[in-house]
Image 1: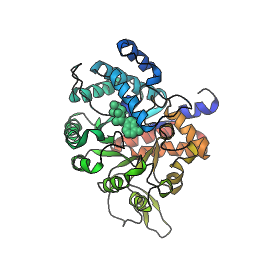
Image 2: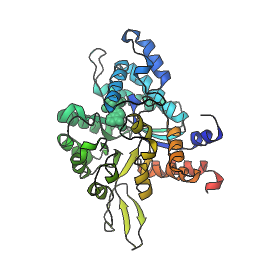
Image 3: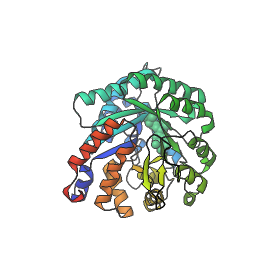
Image 4: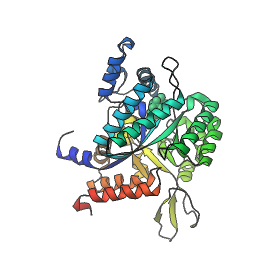
Length: 372
Ligand code: IMP
Ligand code: ZN
């Protein structure tokens, strides 16, 4: 990125709400990891999907396994997390919610608890160095590991929710969407919700998940990751859309994270879910045919609250500035509309209102004169 347009997107203050730690590892950090572990014979082509390349979803999940081999100690996690945070900051991200699946590795003595502590340490280190970014952590449940591990993960997240001074704020549900069923994870997710942890769930990432999505939307989650096949035109159903877009809910009912639009009849049009959309990830992972066919077009034009995210900036060789630029060029958004999109994302963060206010002030300070 180097021309005037690229500078606009780089300098645009941004909020990143859907970033998997080990999927966000940059070329440069992978280089350092490869040097640390030459015996693994891992090459860059095994850890990232370059420009113009695509992979099946299954192949994408193989890439994560390779990266996990490279990142298997406290030292690795600390380096990866600090590098990733600084890279997001350098890309103009002012608020970041990182998510990651705690792992244990017998060879290095890594435990799930130490894993989370190390990510927290990295966040605190960046704070100490005055990196201009507010970072929070979502503990991820890998759906492949079943109900018991999901429950243990929630219990661990609850502990850190109470002891991390607001850094651990929620739960992510992710992992290979073709494996397992959300019904087995329901009680763990409900427990997390009841404890006050925020929930961001990968939903309808593949076409076969209609029933699961229907079930998990009832919890309800606070945000939806991808939601690719929710919309009827993507093979989903109007029933699911209706659940996401709770029309004409009587005034006076309170939900967390509500945004509202007045309707002609004076009632409020209330949205209780927010969607995290990751264009390059979906195109390179082949769940969406091309950028122009991305479900952004349905939700954005309905006025549904959406947030542009990277998912795995390292694996998919992108960054958040490029994702905003891609959205704008593909769907013809003006710079003012792009600014609004990045500003509205503040409403959907999981951190408390005081943080939202600070971010809103930051956006006001940085807002170009012509958008005021
Ligand atoms: P980690 O949790 O920091 O190790 O990040 C990599 C992990 O994130 C993968 O092993 C998956 O469980 C999850 N992940 C990354 N991208 C996706 C996605 O697009 N769909 C579902 N899960 C994902
Ligand atoms: Zn994801």
